[in-house]
Image (cartoon, rainbow, N blue to C red):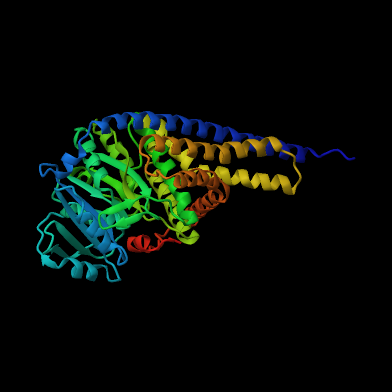
Length: 482
C-alpha cells in the first residue's frame, strides 16, 4: 500500500482541528446558556414573591394610575385591526390612549376603522419630534375619545411607531402589533413594575403564542396548545427565548433586546434618541443597544427591565414559507444592528455590555447558525468520504440536539413552577413532546433559514418580506388552526 501523501495528512489534521473547535465553541456557548438559565430562575422566583404582595385588582379599577399610550402600527391589517382595537378598548386599565398608525395600507384597514369606530378628522397640534413619512390625516373616534388614528404614507414598522410617538401626549408608551393581544391583568403588572423603578426608562415583557387559544373580545380566555405542528414548536421556542434570552440577563443589567411586540418606554426617552431607525429590519434590537450605549455615555443607569409574566399573546406563522421569511428577516435585522454598533465589541468603556453581552450576541446568535451548519456539513462529509470520527458526531449531537432539548425541558419546569399557563395534563404532555421534537427537523430548518439570511447580507438582497395572517377571529372560530 503506497504511503499517504503529506497533503492529505495535513488536510485530515485541519479537518480534525476544525471539528474540535466546533465542539469547544458549543461547549462554551452552552455553558453560558446554563448560567443565563440559572440567572433567569433566580429572577423569576424573586419576581413571584413580589407578585404575591401586589393587589392588581385595585390597580385595574383605579382611575388614579399612570396614563399610557398604546401604539399599534398597521399595514394591510384588515383581517385583524377591528378585533385588535376592540380588545384594547376592553382592557380594564383605566388611563389609556390607543393610537393606531395606518402606515399607507393598500387594503381596507382605514375604511374598517372608520366604519367600526366612527372616526372624524381632527387637527392634532404637535411637534414632529421624530422625522417620519408625511401624515395625511388625524382621526379620533366619536364613540371612544381615547382612540386616535394616524393615517400616513407608507414607511415601515419603525416609521409608523415613530409617527405614533410624535402624537403621544402621555409619559409612557407601549408599542405592540395588530397581531398581538395584550393580557388584561399583566399589563397592570408591567405598569407597576415600570413606575416603581424611578431610574428605569425601558422595559419589555414576555410574549406567548396565541394560536390554539380561545380568544374573545376581552382577550385570551382559555389557554390551549395549538394543533398546528409549527405553531406548537414555537410555543416551546418562545418560552425558552424569553426565559433564557431575556430574563437570563436580568442580574447583569437587563436584556439587550426589548422585543418590538412588547416594548415599553418613557416617551421622552424615545424622542431624545431620535426614535426607531427605519433603515433597520431589527429596529427593536438596534434601539435597545442605542439606549444602553447612550445612557452609559451620559453616565445614567443603562438597565433595561423585563417582566417574565406573559404580557402579550401573538399569532405566529403556521406555514414553512411564512415562518422561514420571518426568521430570515430576524437574522438580517440582528446582523444589521450588530454591525451598526460594532464599536461596542469588547470595548471596556461600556462595561459588561461591551465586554460580555454584545460579544455573546455576536458569537452565539450571529455566528451560531453558521458554526452549526458547518458541523452538519462535516458530518455529511465524513460519511461520504468514510472518515471515521464518531467522537465528533456523538459530542456534536449532545452539545446541540440533546442540550437544546434539556434546556427547553428546564424552561418548561420553571414555567410550571411559576406561571402555570398550561394546566391540563394533555397540554403539559405536548409541552414536553414538542421540546424534544423541536431539535429534530425544526432546528435544522431554523439553521437553514438563518443561513439564507447570511447569504442575503452577502448579496445585499435585504427586503422586509410578507408575513401572512389569518386574524384572531379565525383562531377563535376554528377548531383547527392549520
